[in-house]
Each structure stands twice: as structure tokens, then as C-alpha cells.
Length: 163
Image (cartoon, rainbow, N blue to C red):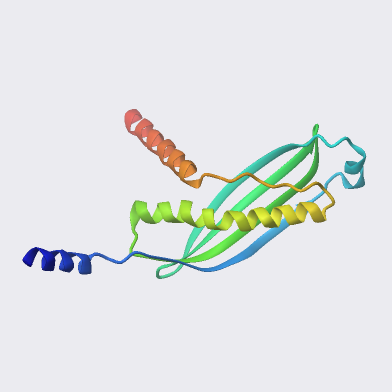
């Protein structure tokens, strides 16, 4: 009985983790067709390049803005057929996480929620630009975060070894 009370007291002292999406919004959208009408005269054999970036900012206590930026460049040979860039953002209430756990939530869970919205905006912009639909494949944000941590750790070890 005493063990149960001690366990309950320990659980009451542990901070409760709260994660809530407050809002998702389109922060920026850019679509360019540098070649103009000439792009439609060429054979459609696109080379697609995708760049992805996330940026986080603390807005208020326990409230964070996460902005996922996707830049898609489609080329026909050496010429850029079109370029689309989307900044899809969200406000997330996160409480009870600190340090590494908070960084992981901001860099994996939040972008994972934002990605389908950004992908839809890109597809709509491309179709409205009179190009074939462009459905981007899913992104494993957990793997990207782990790779970034691994790279940072190796760089830190290299700096320590050179010191």
C-alpha cells in the first residue's frame, strides 16, 4: 500500500507532457516559371530537386512556431522549368519537454504534421501553373534529425580532437 502511494506521489511530481497543435498556416508561397511559354515547347523530361529546411522560434511560454520550407526546382536539361517554394508554418503548444526531447519534438513531430499541408500547396501551385501534378514522397523527419545529431556529434569530436 505504501509503495502504491509513493508511486502515485512520484507520478504527481513528474511534469505532464502536453503537445497540442494550435494553428497551421501558409507563411509564404512563391512560384516562378523563368522560361515563360518556351517551357511548354520542350519535351517533358523533368529533373526534380527538393530542398527541405525547418526553423523554430519560441513565441511565448510553451508556444513555438515551426516553419517548414520546401523548395522544389524542376529543370529540363539545364533550364529551370519552374521553381516553387513553400513555407508552411504551425503554432504548437509544448509543455513538459526540455532539452533533447523538446528539440526532437520541434524537429520531427511538428514538421511531420506540417509536411502534408506543404505538399498539397506545392501540388496545387504546380497544377495551376499548367504542369503535371507533382506529388512529393513522404519524408522521414526522425531519420533526418538523427543524421543531423550524428553529424553535429562528429563535428564536435573533431573540434575536441584538434584542440
